[in-house]
Image 1 (cartoon, rainbow, N blue to C red):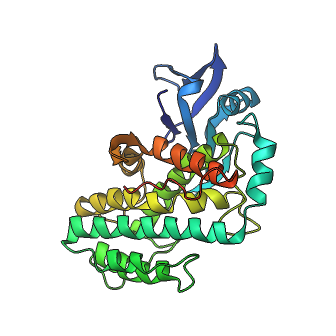
Image 2: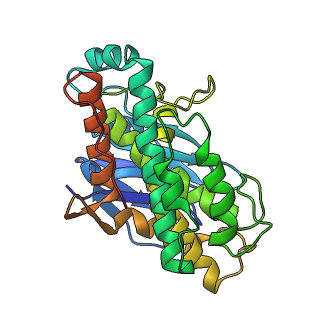
Amino acid sequence: MTERIVEISESAARLSVRYDQLVIERDGAETVTTPLEEVAVLVLATPQVVLSQAVMTRLLEKGGMVVLSGSNHAPAGMVLPLETHSTQAERFRQQAEMKEPVKKRLWQQLVQAKMRAQGRLLERVRGSDGGLGMLAERVRSGDPENLEAQAARKYWPLLFADAHFRRGREGPDQNRHLNYGYAVLRAVVARAVCAAGLHPALGLEHHNRYDPFCLASDLMEPLRPVVDRAVWDWVQEHDATQPLEKEAKAWLLRPMFARYELEGEERTLFDAAARMASSLARVSEGREKEMVVPEV
């Protein structure tokens, strides 16, 4: 199945459904249609979008999801399918009953894979992994020493060659680009989580009463460096303080459709997220002890 991310921005648009096709109409422009079942994520990034309840319902029924952007053009929320798996209630119960040692061991896997991926990116763009590879080997179950945070303090200044750079949500710099890329990546992972019959709010490590997508935040960790690389490429040729506009957004979506070598085969991020979520479901059922975690 083709996986598409459709973003509506920059100009007013009317969305409707006709014969299981998403229809996008703009004044003075050609009407665009695409099969609903091929839309993985619909990003609504302008307040000038008019759509019916039927559009939302049919898209969700086909397994797609909707990301809504706020007035600052940054993603503000997501709408996910409510029922996406035939044994969803049973999966929810198994997931909720997962023992704490199991969750800590899975979090160790995720953190180690993330740090190794960060190290590989540093090695590619800076010639050295900054010691992240060795640091990843020291991560214990549950990461009680919070080596993930130690790695981040090394990683970000090295990646952007700026000793003063700090990762933050409100920075008027490449942080805005990172936030946008991560939000779309999180949506891709959240969709995979729901398709596997798991509840996105029941996280392994992330716990926030106001966050309904904690598990997606957990599972996206080892995939974050693909967004980091796209942002790094962008700021090599553009001013990081420029507004996050259409060209930059299109650039940041490119990694979502690229192919990566995973388990000896070339796969997309959609496939990587689906495999990871499905393997987590098998762990929750007691069929496997470790999760399939992609090394991008």
